[in-house]
Image (tube, rainbow, N blue to C red):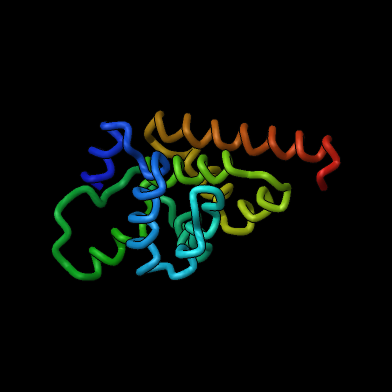
Length: 151
């Protein structure tokens, strides 16, 4: 996480270049093999449905995983618990790449929109603002694509 924070500080986030995306995708696909099919143009495979669903159901209002992790089980839990400051921008990027109405449906099916909804209950204002922005944009795109007859 410290590396990603540093990259973001230097304006080199995971969507800034194909090389950075490929490096992130390669590491993430070790744990979620479907992610290897993701690309900058089509990032949806990056979102693991089961882990995202679990994070919706077990959403933590405030992360308690910032302390020292001593046990292997703590490490596994920390890995599988999403940090909204990391995942919400990925969900926002997925939304930005939508080119067809079916991709908006994918965002419901893979629990991306559900995750944004539970993030509205976060204790952190910046997380709530990010989540709200994603949901407003998703609703707008749903209406625009519906009105344009793409359904």
